[in-house]
Amino acid sequence: MKRRRVLWLVILVIVACAAIAVGFDPDRRVQGWLTGEPFYQGRAASAWHRDLRQPESPRSADAFNALVAGKRDAVPVCAWVLRTAPEPEARWRAADALGHMGKDASTAAPELVAALADDDPLVRGVAVRSIGELAPDVPGGVRALVAFFPDIEAMRAVASFGPAGAEAVPALIATLKYEDPTVRWQSARALGKIGVPSVPAVTELARLTISDPDSLVREHAAEALGDIGPAAADGIPALVKALHDPVARVRRDAVRALGQMGPAAKAVLGDIRSLQKDSDADVRAAAERAVRLIDPTSSR
Image (tube, rainbow, N blue to C red; front, side, top):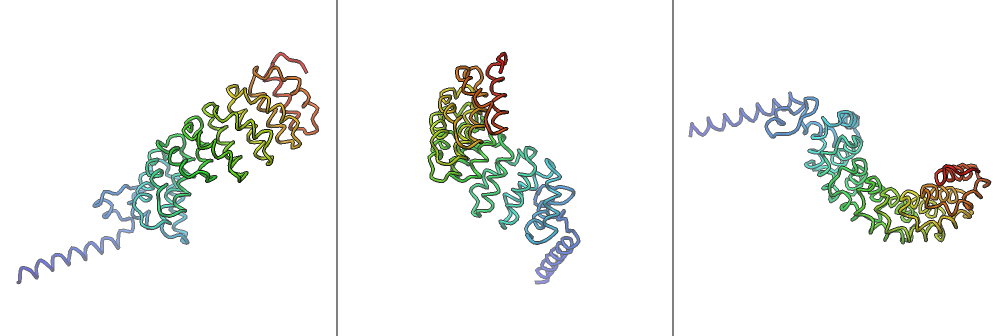
């Protein structure tokens, strides 16, 4: 009986000492060492987590800014918080910090991809944007983002992958036919940023360039054909028709796109030169540059 009391007394002393240690250890160093947490600026990840989970506190903003400034050194802490924090406020702030770090946070790509399945919609949304900031160094990122289509942020994130986003091309071609014009032009933009792997989209992009009722869609479809470049030469007839579009931005991007086709557009130089007298200054400038790109020896 006496031995049991002594044992309980020892346990109580240990618990009391631990509580005192925690109270005098706001940086959670002891806890961090015991549990194997990552550290940054001498503070355990759980201390950073405590600060990040307080959405209205200046301490949360200070912690966020300090982590972003830490770049690679702070990545393990942010990844730990994103992976383990029970509060969505802490998780989305950790994901946001990783996005602000950009490519310095590439080692946390698996945690960001996993966060796309988070129960909280805000955490998922921030993870989508942050993946775009880390692109293209996010294995599995494109496939995971495609599952969110026609979400605009997901399409913008895929566009950030450039040619590495080729896996998304079939899904982007499908979203070119969505009723929402914003989805259509964001799809066109993403296809253009992906570049040559988007050649299967040329027919649909050409159609939108001359027939979509929304001028933003026509503008971005024309731009996408130019971004794909000479591999999109089948779109030249549509671009020539778009030179007569009533909206100056569409004419400008159509003539720019023809310039990006290079010698493949030499047969339509006459149509391009006609825009050197366009009523819009940006269109005139784009036409002059296009002529030089297609035929550097050509005179006006």
